[in-house]
Image 1 (cartoon, rainbow, N blue to C red):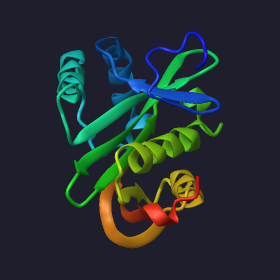
Image 2 (cartoon, rainbow, N blue to C red):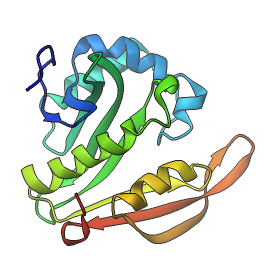
Image 3 (spheres, rainbow, N blue to C red):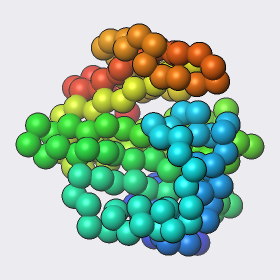
Image 4 (cartoon, helix red, strand yellow):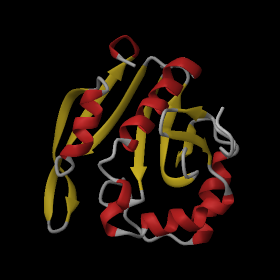
Length: 182
């Protein structure tokens, strides 16, 4: 383990995942209230620090949610969140979520590595069988990341997402344990 990493849960080459802390709420509200970042989130309501703290508090006891901070190892910098949502232990599936909130690090491979770590967590630590997600048609970079990691397009929900004055398709993707290529 590298020195200086704060409570690492999963460690990659450039990033690591750790539990969210209450101190992270301040940075989270900056990201969710930033239109450039929130365009890829499933909600678009303004959030307050109090609401973010309540959300973080629910993570301490939730058995069906796991949201982790994505941090750069070298700088120990909090740059985003990655998670498993709606974890279903009977059917052994979950929905993958990722948001890199620090726009200055977009396009540098950190999202791919964080997604790889959350997939590994799902399959290797939680013994899940299936992961799923949806990605909007106006976010081809995210879709390329997921395809590179083995996710397959399973369907298109036409004009499901409204953003910036237009409706966009939502691409539903899935990854089975046996299709995963670490």
